[in-house]
Amino acid sequence: MGFAKTHDILDVNSSLINSEVKLGGWIEDLRKLGKMTFLTLRDVSGIIQVIVKGELNDKLEGLNRQSVVFIKGKVQDTKAKDFDCEILALEIDVLGKAIHPLPIDPIGRLESNIDNRLNSRALDMRNQKTASIFKLRHHVLAILRKTLSDKRFIEITTPKIIGSASEGGANLFSLEYFGRTAYLAQSPQLYKEQMTIGLERVFEISNFYRAEKSHTGRHLSEFTSVDIEAAFMDYTDVMNVLESLVMEVYKFTSENCKKEQEEIEYEIKVPNAPFDRVAYSQVVDELKSLDQKIEFGDDLLDSHLRLVGEKHPGFYFLTDWPLKLKPFYIREKDEDATLSRSFDLQYGYLELSSGGTRLHDPAILKARLAEQGLDPALFKDHLQAFDWGMPPHSGWGLGLDRLMTTLIGIDNVREVVLYPRDPDRLRP
Ligand code: ATP
Ligand code: MN
Image 1 (spheres, helix red, strand yellow):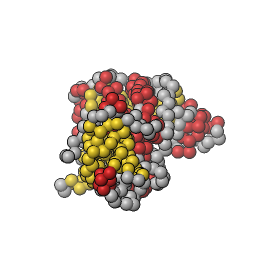
Image 2 (image 1 turned 135 degrees about the vertical axis):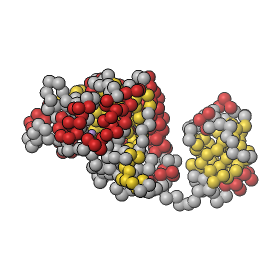
Image 3 (image 1 turned 30 degrees about the horizontal axis):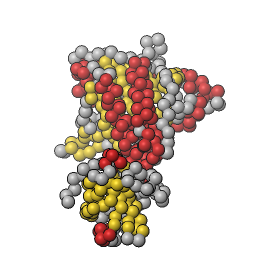
Image 4 (image 1 turned 180 degrees about the vertical axis):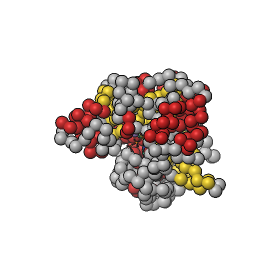
C-alpha cells in the first residue's frame, strides 16, 4: 500500500463521506468490543476514530499504543459525538512498533516529571500539551520574522565560533580549534553592530552560549536570542520596536492559536501598551522605601527584582541604568554622563531583554574599553570598522525562551526548549 497519505486528519470531514482516504499516524487508543475495534489515530494535525472489523483485527494483535500505522479506509458518518465522521478501515499496515511500557505516558494521563520527559523528548512530543508549546514557538518565530521584515530589518547569521572573547571573558565556553583556542559566541553584539554600516537595520534569531553555572528556571547554557541592531535609532526607538514586536506576538498567538491554548489550558492575554517606562533611579527609591539596602549605582539583585516585580507586574521597561553597570559599548546620556541610554524589558521580576544606544565614536569606545580593564588590542577587528563610516545605532537582545515562558504562563525555560542544556544536562 506504500505510505503516501492522501490527507492529514484535520482535512478529513463529513464532506468526504463515502470516499476512500489513506491516513498515517500513531495509535492513541485501542478499544476492542467483541469483533470490532475502535482505534483512535493521531497525526500532527488531529485525531480521528477508525473502525476495524473482522479479519483486519488480526493486524492489531499484540500491537501497542503509539505504534505507527498506515490505514486505507472509507469515510463514513459517525455516532461518536466528538467526531464529525469516522473511518471504516479497509487495509492496515503496521509501519513502526512501539514497546510497552513506554518510558513516559505520552497521552499525559500520568503526569511525568520534567526530567523524565526531557529524557524521552521525542515521545513527550506526542503529548499534545508539549506539541502545542512547540507549535506556538513556531508561530512566535514566524511572526517575529514577519514583523521585523515589514519594518525593513534584514535577517543575518553571525558566526557562533569566534576567535576572541568579545565582551570580556566570563561565561565563555572555549573549544579546541585546529590547535588554537576558540570560543562559542555569547551574543552577536559586535557583528550586528558592524552590519549597520551596510545594512542599517539587521536582526538575528540564533542560539548563543553562556557557561552559566546557574540552576534557575531562566538560565540555560544554550539559549535562543532574538537580536536587532538599527542605524539612526536611539534607545527609545528600539524600545518601541521591541514593544510592538511583543504586542504582535501576543496578538497573533492569542487570535490564531486557539487549539494550542486549549491544549496547554492557558489563555494568552494581550497586554496593555504602551508598557510603563520606569527609570532605574525610581526603582532604587522604591526599594529604599521598602527598607532595602541599596544605593544608586548598585546592581539589582534577584531579591530586589522580586520586590520590583511585585510593584510592577507584567511588562515594563527599566531604563537609564548607571553607565558603570553597563558593557563598554553602551552610550552615556547627554544630560548626565553617569547614566546610560539603556533599558531592560522586564516581565515582573524576569528580565526578557537588554538594550541601548551604542557608542559609535571610536576614540570614546577605545577609552571606555580601557576604563573597563579590557585590552583594545583584542578588539582590533571590531574597532577597525568604526573608521569605515559607522552610523549612530541602537539595539537589543531578547531571550526567546524567556519570552515563551511569559507567553504561556510557566516558569521554567526547559519547558519551551527542545533539548535544554544546563550544567547537569548535556544529553540527550
Ligand atoms: P541575567 O541577568 O538574567 O542572567 P543577562 O543580563 O546576563 O541576563 P543579557 O546579556 O542581557 O543577559 O542577554 C540578553 C537576554 O538574553 C536576556 O535578557 C535574557 O532574556 C536572555 N538570556 C541571557 N542569558 C540567558 C541564559 N543563560 N539562558 C536563557 N536566556 C538568557
Ligand atoms: Mn541583561
